[in-house]
Length: 261
Image 1 (cartoon, rainbow, N blue to C red):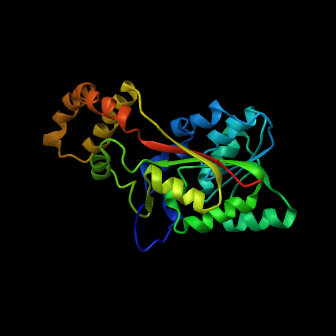
Image 2: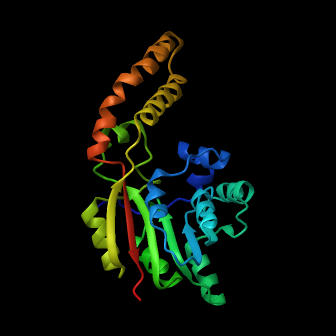
Image 3: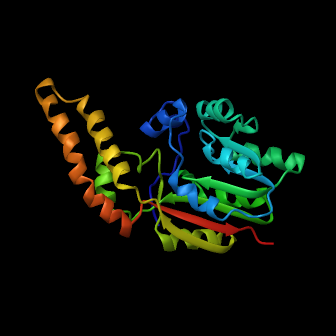
């Protein structure tokens, strides 16, 4: 596993929109995370209380509620929690640290049957402590599911040159399949399985490329602005390369495991 040092999380980057994805969370326009789809293809038949750690705008919790689970969520970002409550009516979504939430659950004797954390583990400055708290919140045989970015995804180096989202203070940990499985097993989880997911469709890639060009063009000089329209057209040709590459090296790793019975 690759990691940065020193590990020092800064929760303020979320509300201050230190990365463009947080703007989408706050406006309620972020599309449903494709890396969460495998969870909904094989949900447990016995529903119960679910907790989504780092629930963001509440999209995953909303679908869990539709499936019959009691939705509970936490996030460090107060603005995203406001969207989760306002857009999806998730009144049990709260802005709180995991430490404080764990303490509150222990005081009232609350535990969960399903715990998810999508795109959260790579943000942790102490992943083993994080997973220990997750374990303490789960009932015996509690299903655990989540995702992380694939360190070895197609064009990862180019992605990191175009965006700072894979670097501190956003991401501290870079996962491949084997170290992720090892970390989850060392934390005591059983039946660990990991699936590579997240390949975009051709037109999704085109949209992302065109959006990237438009955002960057805002900072170009007036003499360079004429390049933006032809570059947006060229996106339809360029998109073929990542579309093929993502079939072999998808963008994310989905994991599924259980708290010991």
